[in-house]
Image 1 (tube, rainbow, N blue to C red):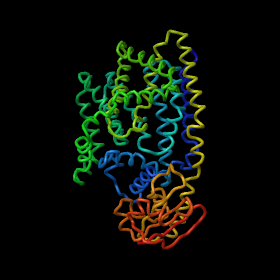
Image 2 (cartoon, helix red, strand yellow):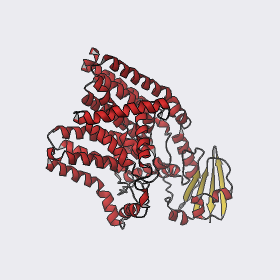
Image 3 (cartoon, one colour):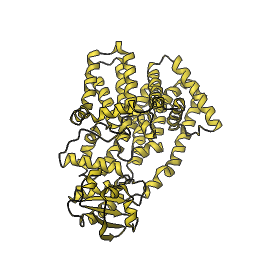
Image 4 (cartoon, rainbow, N blue to C red):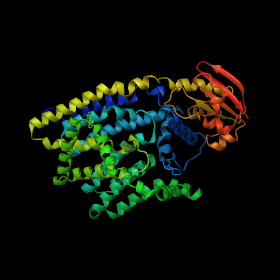
Length: 495
């Protein structure tokens, strides 16, 4: 379309797409709908960095026992919590902001890869309005900010391979790779794939800049290394135990190729709203895969080969993980199918019928995304609007009753707010009412002289409480006092 050759019109359309995708990400965030264990725990650690100046050398514990992530996520989110005056919704806004910026970077990369502005705008809008991607952009969690830094890394990588001079792209690439691993260990897969690529093209790299980038990467992991040195190499032992004390026949995780296929289907489903388990879906998937693989081998387009390698090698490496696998482990790959499909569709540039079919198909995918937007998460989130205000009000009631030293536990009316150690209440008690409970490790419950149990589900018997891990560790002998206000009951348990 000739109209899209006008740069200003392109920018206006892109601005509309970005603003609409931002609206969907920011809508109702002030209600703090997703303040469950992980979000409350992270907010509490960030608050302690800001207010109590307690710097951290580690992040969250990974799914491998004894292995912690590096702590950069906390420092990345510190300015946002500070600007929002310790209101934890600030971290949600930060996540949505990074999600919106990812849309901009995706458009930039698509225009460079396809040299087709209409195609770039089409796929950018599809990514910007994809329900599950929007959902993950709407609440604070360390994996949810990964796509932005993956896109930045991709921009830097393509600039380096193009031969762009200067250290800035090497520095930015390795900074992003280090930050991605800080955010979630699934980023190791992306780092290894990038490293293989750089070693393959090693002759064209500036060696001084390359090793300078490696130094930046190591610097981002230094806090974790320092923590290991100070704590008897707990992370190193966790990694060793993972590889040495699990059955060897679990590596790769059986069945390996089924795992690869499932991840491949999941990622393509972000773009194509097709049931790949149906006959027609399998036919479509087979044709698309044959086209993808054949062009990957035949194409002389180096950028597409790089994309294809990163996509397939990352899926294969991720499939080696032998523990339970969750969809968010693939968050770092979410933008790549859009880049690959854009590159493939750009092949139809001179074929009007195929081009028309391509845009009709993208439009249908877009309509499907909007249709499923409501059922995907809006109805669920609407049930939690006002959660932050509710927690603040309930925490004030609890703060008026507790006496130092103490610990707390809770049972929530919402199963999505899992966990009985009341980290969500802890945040409000400690931050706004200066009532800091002991922490939530077993020893903290054991040494507490009293335990305040918060029930959002009505009356709870002493025997029911005693079955909860936190209460069981505390070992109460009786309920000393009980208070009720609105929708919560507060019990004071003593030994």
